[in-house]
Length: 397
Image (tube, rainbow, N blue to C red):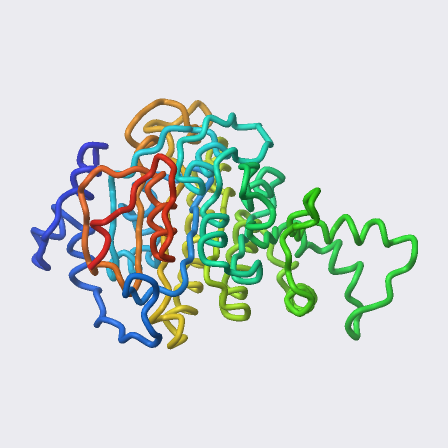
C-alpha cells in the first residue's frame, strides 16, 4: 500500500464489521470488533470528579512508524488497547533527534536538544509539575528507562523552582539488572558479602538506579527511609528473579518494561513513565527493528494485563503510548530506516490512550501535537502545565 493509503486508513472512522469496511478502514473495524464492556469505578473520584488515580506513560521510542504498529500485525497488544481507548493518528513531532523529541514529550514544550546532547531539560517535566502541584512523595512517581546515559536527565529539569526535589525515582533496567551486577551481589544461597575491593564496582553498578543527587540546599529527592528500604529490597529481588538474564534484540527495552510492570504492581505509583529506544536498530536492519517492536508490544501486553487483572488498577489507571517520532518513508542503502527525510512517516506518529475517563473505541482525526500529552497527564492530577502544549480535551468521555 502507498503512504497515502496508510494514512487514510487511520483517519477514516465509523467503520462497521462488514468485509468492505475492514478493507477500507481496518483500525476502526478493529475497535468495533474488540471493544470490551466499560469498567466499574473502584475508587473515589480524582480531582475534577475523574476516576483516574494513576497514569502510565510509555514512550515507545527509538523511532517507530505507524505502519509497523497499528497498521500492521506486529502489535496485537497495542491494537487491543486501542480498541478500548482513543487513537490519535495525526500527532505532530518536530525534533527528529531521540533525546530532544522525548524531552519535548515530557516537558510539553518543543525542545531543540541535539541527538548527542546530555543536559537536563530547561522546562519542568510532567513529573515535577505533578509532584509540586499535588505534594506526592518521590515513591509515588517513577521513571523506568532502558539505561542510556541521556535518559537519566528525564527525571527532572534544571528549571528554577522545580528540579531534584520534585523529580521522579529513576531506575535504568539495563544498567542495574545485568549479569555483572548479579554475580557481584547474589550468591547461590542468596546475597553474598561484598569484598572491600569490590565496593567501588558495586557503587558504580548501583548508580544505575539514580535517585537525583542532593541539591546544594540539601533538598534532593527526599525519599523516606522506608521507601528507600523497599526500593533496595525490590532491586535485590529482581536480581534473584532473573531480570538480569533478559537478552537478545530489544533486551534493554524489555528490562525497562519488566521493571515498569513490577513497579506498578509492587509500589503502585501514581505516575509512572517508561522510555524505550532499542528500535533505533532500524538504521542498520529493518528486520531487527520489527523484532524489537514485536518484543516491546509483548511487554506492553503484559503491563496492560497486569493493570486489567487488578481491580484497583483497572478502574483507576490511564495509559498513554506513543513514539517520540517515526521513521523515513523509504529504505536507506542498508535496507534500514533512518530518520531525516521530513516525510509524514517521520513527522506524524500515533498516540493510543486508554483509561477510565476516556472515550472508548474512538479514532480522533484531529491534528494534535506530541507536546499535548504532558499537559493532559498533569490535568488528570488537577494541575496545569504552563508550556506550549494544550490539554487533549477531546480525549475525555
